[in-house]
Every structure is written in structure tokens, then in C-alpha cells.
Image (cartoon, rainbow, N blue to C red; front, side, top):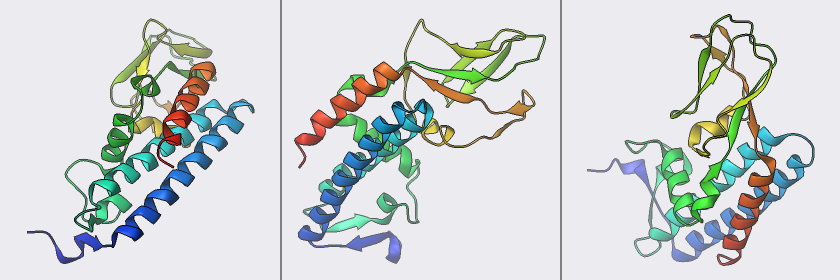
Length: 195
């Protein structure tokens, strides 16, 4: 049984209005991401790109509920949440409607200075691991393969955290700018069909 406040009841016009606002928000997020790419702020551009995918996924999930008029609160980030992360669910839904290329990007780490005398392994998101040789300064990435974008990249683009295992602040994310521009253009083409 669903808790009483777990859902919103909206009419079709309200749902479609929300979807239109989501699409407009996606366009603005992508536009802002492109502006940041020109300012040597790739990691912030990637973060906005990921927010755009999530917002796009939200609109697609809302459309699924148009006939029932019942919208689960978790779509708007309100409790109760679904068993998986609402953010992951919306990202997955967004990527489902985008070309596969839109979720692939070469991502690496930028180190100011790694003074450890042993190779250290850093996690980037839940799946990607990058091994950094001793006394490395600069940019490190696994160029032998491209990374599948995931939710963790979205927040990691904006915040510095503490890496307790390696006893240092977390790294900055470095992004393949040309590929991200291509992904944004592909996304914008898809978005034209949802206006």
C-alpha cells in the first residue's frame, strides 16, 4: 500500500506544462554547459550536462503517468523514495531516449600534486578506477577506453570531498571537451523532437 502523501494527482495539462518547463530547463542547462566549455571549466560543464540528462529523464517519467494522472513524489525528489536512487532512475530514463554516444566520454583526474611514493588507485564514480603513478602531477586518465557517465560524476563535478583512503582532498575531474561538445549537440538534436 502506498503512503497517502507519496503521490500527486495532476491533470494532463498540468503534467504537459511541467514537461515543457523541464525541456526548457534542459535547453538552458545545455546552453550554460557550452558556455562553460569555452571558459576552461569542463568539469562544471559536465555537471550541468548530467543535470540536463536527469531533467530530461524526469520529463519522460512524467509522460508515462499522463493517463493515470498520478505522479509519484520521488520524481520531484520528495519522499518516500523508490528503492533505487531517484537521481539514478531519472538519469537512466534520460539516457534511454538519447543516442548511446551521449553517455560515453573520456573522463580523467587532474592532480595538483600526488606526493605518495606508491601507485595509488582513485575511484571516479562507482565503476571507474584510475591508477596514478608515484609522484604524479597533472592529468591522468585511462585513454584506452571511454567511460560510461554515471550519477556520481554529476555531484563530483561541483564539490571537493575528502578521500580518506588516500588521505587527500578529492581530485578535479578532467573532461574531453571535444567529445562533450559533440554529446551536447546530439542531445540538442534529440530535444528538438520534444518541443
